[in-house]
Length: 126
Image 1 (tube, one colour):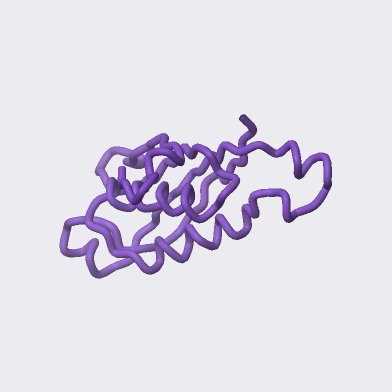
Image 2 (cartoon, helix red, strand yellow):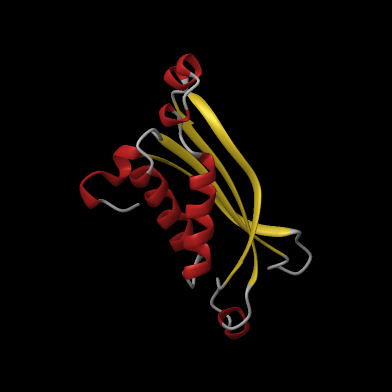
């Protein structure tokens, strides 16, 4: 399976359980690996046969900016579901969401997950 990689997408949003995290937007760092088959796009040289990674980026930005989740677990699971259900060519995704500076003495804290399209079949949420 081929991969599309979006590396170090730095966004600002509301994420966290502490009172100050519920008011002030903070940095949220996202890394995405989308697993897809690029064969048809490579042979045709036609963007209609490819996963539009600009649309993927815009979808992630829109969701992060509109959400105000308490937990990274919720945000990352929602993003995985969106990417796997909204982009038909994506079969599997690895997502990493981090909050730089969230823990004293640590550069960042975050979660990485891997999900497949089948994990979100029939409205199932992971």
